[in-house]
Length: 201
Figure (tube, one colour):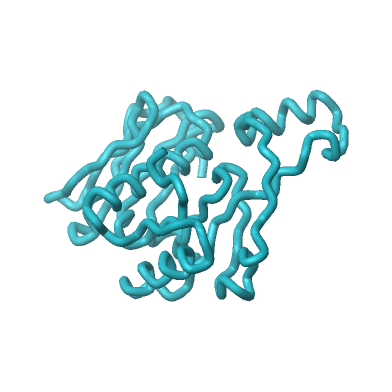
């Protein structure tokens, strides 16, 4: 939901003490770990950034912290790895899940030509990315994975993220305006599991 008026420097959100640590956006960009909250509230910086960049920064931060602290939430990019990621969330009582996967990237020569202004608008909306041809492995399908798959343009190749279907369990992204957002991830260690061959690369 967009909010009118002056752009605030930060936003406050409620969190449960048992779901720490938390991840929040910084006002100058990037994300920051908040280890605990005795008051039940934490603050997130309001920043001017493409939401897709925030999503990827969250995945990278959770992968790095998960490996450092041996949470068990990071696995290889494979069918077994995605199933292990789903088992991780299930161990915390999450049963309704879906898998975020990279979108299929076609060779530029077979991409239909579009109006140049429309093409530029799409790049602004999604963030211009280096075009890399990518096709899904045969095992990456709902039947074999056993979960719904949701293509996500911001995910890099050979990376999948298992999350609750109900995103409120993970956190919230607030749109202050069309250019400014703030995010609070209030349960990252229990609601985000990753299958990625280069989790911290």
